[in-house]
Amino acid sequence: MSKKTHPKKIYLPEEKLPKTWYNIVADMPNKPLPPLHPATKQPVGPDDLAPLFPVELIMQEVTQERYVDIPEPVREIYKIWRPSPLIRAYELEKALDTPAKIYYKYEGVSPAGSHKPNTAVAQAFYNAREGVKKITTETGAGQWGSALSYATQLFDIELQVFMVKVSYNQKPYRKTMMNIWKGNVVPSPSNLTETGRKILAEDPDNPGSLGIAISEAIEMAVKDPHTKYSLGSVLNHVLLHQTVIGLEAKEQMEMADAYPDVVIGCFGGGSNFAGISFPFLQDKLTRGKDMRVIAVEPDSCPKLTRGEFRYDFGDTIGMTPLIPMYTLGHNFMPPAIHAGGLRYHGAGAIVSQLLNDGIIEASAVPQLESFEAGILFARTEGIIPAPESTHAVTQTIREAVKAREEGKEITILFNLSGHGHIDLGAYEQYLNKEIHNYSVTDDQIAENLKVLDDMGFPKI
Ligand SMILES: *Cc1c(COP(=O)(O)O)cnc(C)c1O
Image (cartoon, rainbow, N blue to C red; front, side):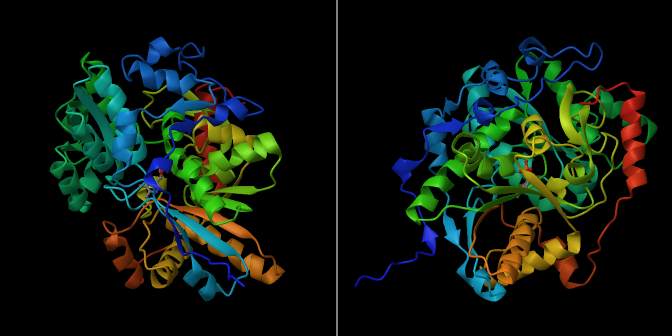
């Protein structure tokens, strides 16, 4: 009698790399609401976005087509690290003594060490094809800046990164990565823009913020017709590009003769969560598959679990259109947790609609529990997760423990969005017992949201 084998790692052959991305908008019962112009409160059209993005990406932002072709040159670059492995976490299962089967998709195998190159390469490609010579962007902890540096130099595009000044000083290795890939990095506020010069004139020691960095990047892009701007999360086209993760995972789960009861992703602006979950959600939306899909945020930045679904700016300063989002208010200043990629005040339009419609769930995790989960994962599965990814690990552990208590043999799939090799400073603090939990009061949230009432931003 042949014994059924249970492989630990499931590789998809290169020729099975998806040829299209999946656009969930085609299958959503309620389509995402349009972005609005902040002054007129009228829907923003493609023309309004033309100074910032290439035409092809603007079309992807609004398309209702179910599948969008992945250009061949993008697929060729993807093949350097894709298809990424799907791994059965046997060692973690043993440590938790759980009947649950745990699978994870590992995106840390990319050049920048996270899922972000999946969209960075696509965005650089479309910009290059439309003759764009230079791209600007902002970066907080530096993950997006390094992914986009890698991608733009492949297509001979110059890149200017505005990196929040405190992070620039705290994370020198991210800057080195960007420089290796030819990215120009300045601490923001900088003297390259009017916004930056004005802030520095008033306050030379200003530590910077993501909002200021966005303003500087947008200002530089709109002032030059050959320069465009790029964003690494939140927008529909970014989520679209990341679905390559879930499309591969679906094939790999089939190879393992498994299907998830629960799909989990950590949540900053929503791109890796969308990437792992949307292709599975298609089965829930179109074939009535019963499955839970959980977005995991830090409890210090709880827009999905405690925010409000309404129109708000995508940035802190107010340069973007009004986006229909679960938000804590654009003025919300999240505590300085180590999962820098999850410190964002809002969620994208698609994910917000799905949450509002009860198609997905959200959960919030305290910082200490997330590091404990990261350490357990490193000691069992071997990989040291990025501080952002530990949030997905935490929820996975919670579900696996619940499965043990209830005696249920469920299958869990989560996305390990990146490795933590450039974030070891955070782990060192954890080992030195210097990591704390932060709490956010209801009053703080209400106060921030009241600003939106005062500004007359529509509720949904
Ligand atoms: C940026 C980042 C995130 C958060 O961004 P999303 O758009 O929500 O995916 C999560 N994990 C890692 C490793 C990141 O670099």
